[in-house]
Image (tube, rainbow, N blue to C red):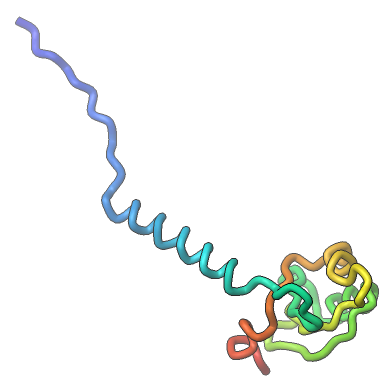
Length: 110
């Protein structure tokens, strides 16, 4: 008689499921809490991290955004976008992300 050979499939470790759930919930909470409120006059904008301060300033100026303050990270600025399609122009100028400035005030102030 020949023995049945079963092929065992590798199983995920139990901690990997918990880690994936933790990361997914962190991303969901972060995106909900960092969103720009509708009708906000002032926003924090994140340019690519390898950009210098001069590049971020010139990109914000090209989108007609008034710079309110800098943060500890040179590519993260708090600006007042133009009233007419200001956020769209900032995105065209190179902004990756627009964030509620109150959400980042404690973390990135100089």
